[in-house]
Image (tube, rainbow, N blue to C red):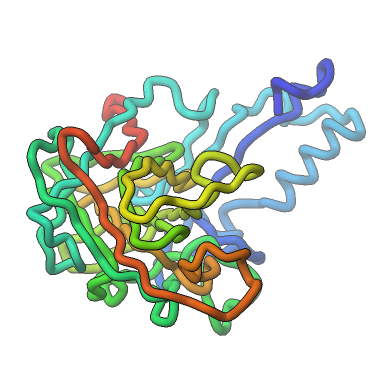
Length: 312
């Protein structure tokens, strides 16, 4: 916004990121998780902040807006607000967590792991994605239909029971780890279908077993290279997929695990890919797809997390 705004109006850019889901009114209860009193409307005068902003930039009134820090974020886990000068945050360590397994990362009962060590010679992970039995949505950045598909943070344990969900977790953390900023998954994968989807979800897995979703993303294979020039896949060929998982700010506390879920559906948050390669929504035909995720020295699938040093 600052780069493309004309003249002095480029100063009129600020970011406020809270722990809420999409819909109003804001609440400290986000899904099934209480994010803390500081995130509640009693503590955050969102209407007042917006009115001050418009008064300053549209009416020329003198108030605190001009001198306010341009970035204000709510760090979940710490349950506190923090002011920053830039986004992403200065001093961010972009740390790669590589996917590992012995070929059985299916469900939370499998052997999937996340670690900063590069993979060596490891077998791939596979699962069958059936559009007629998609992975159900359980929270996330949803809006508009809370009675049927509520948004926010929920326990993902039941989703992680499914064999078509690959689960990769770190060992219990020895110390607190703050993740604040944009999240990206680089996935090397193949499919038996000419077109399919790959999904990803970042989860904070607590020692009590509660697995709290933080943020997620999806990539449709046909637009892996370009939104404007779709290209189908050659079945069985390995492709690189970059999944934008948006952004979050969360303190993974000592004893918790950083967890990644990989699958091919998150329905109805995202529409199901029928795997046929036909024009989407042209007919009702579907077919299952065998998905294969590679994580070895030649195809090191990895999650890139923005780690904030503890000195902050």
